[in-house]
Image (tube, rainbow, N blue to C red):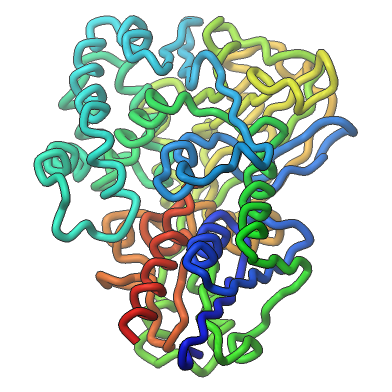
Length: 479
């Protein structure tokens, strides 16, 4: 593998958002780029399918694209010219309580302040301060370790809180249960126990992102974003080969730079005996995180939430109190199935009616499970929804479930149902897949990793592919 003479040729293995951003970045630099995708459809986890009934469009993977809208790698691209556009709910997120009320997050932070009572001012101080620093902080957390930091004061203000556990920050910042529970719902996206260091970082980033972006969805399904990326790559001269699995790096052209949108486990399979033993051992120790059990719903009517605010929300976090959510995530971390799981519900037809026949709706819900668990969590998920939306089951026309192992079969990057490309605790947040200031390089000349198993980790932002491509470009210039 490697560069020969003046040849600038690249092969990208995998067509998730990171792989496509890597390909686009190299094509923009004038390279000849080919993407090889094992599945019949490009996009990785950005794929939409009819999983229940005809006319109902379901995002099997990602739906909420808040980070995509703010990603420096994505927002510069003319994706609207290829038919991609976002629809946004009036309420980005709602967190209902057993008394029939809910806390909400919108693009106006005062809406949230008004639902948090005496903690409203504290929410404004904590999250509002991050909103003020966002343009300086976001680019630095969406990449490898920022050395030297470009806005050290802003990054320090964020870091003082981000290194804490979600529980510690919630206790320090809020007096009442409503604000603590709202923050717990955001922090639990980390797939970590809420007592774990840096779990607060995920709560802060996602809360700020929801306030700023409104957590929109792609009109017509997330597949539209993947299709727009493919179309843009093709206008730059790149090609995408579908139903084209790559079994080994040795099968690829030896004059091409290779970027792999795969996790460490697949990379070791691709590299075979060519990976140095030390690097092989490091990747073999790479840890994967929680799995996911997901249900897609075709609905005859909207979910009958008791709290009216939930009916206008694109995303709803279910779990009640901070302690309930913490118990659920702690159980999963110990390899147990929670009886009352923390559940994320997304109802895209609140703002995008094109996803269902007129008058009907779609929704999906998922909860965390131990990595690789094949447990069916449907009943427990629906019990949580019924808790806050009595009569929900009567609205269901059809459902389609996906266990953690099935999710991995659908997208091999979701090892054991892990949608983040690996555990994102303090040991693997930046040191992924190995501790390195250039984590995208591998010891194989001209071979790079560009998946969510490299910084900044999971999410639809394309930044890992963007950084990996720039790493390859810098190496080519230096060669």
